[in-house]
Length: 166
Image (tube, one colour):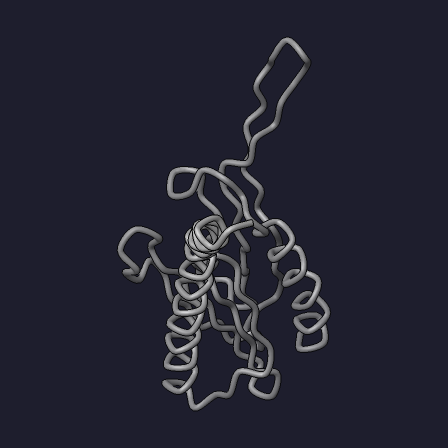
């Protein structure tokens, strides 16, 4: 190979790698921004996040000592806040997943698509309305990217904690 070919191949490889580097930096910046928002929400309650998890534009965290759950969701388009919630688990009687789906008949059979994924918290006080954390809405985002696994994991994590507190 001559020098011109080596130089051209090197430039092509660099041009192919740059988009991946830029995407990685953007995702890390978004993750840091979500974490700062979650930590600010926790500091308002004088709490410390001991467990946290990210999924796209969502971050959820737990202060295991104070039994407080923190949830923050951003808009994908402009990074504006969609939802922020603090839930005192000592006042909660149950949590459950609400999976709103739609079944469509196709030639291959029935196809089920998830419209919404929510985590519903009911309280021990009868007059307290339920709190719903929206993990996925088809109107905001067309494709699932780990929300099912995230919501199932947190339901399994929170249910025993809630039962122990009741």
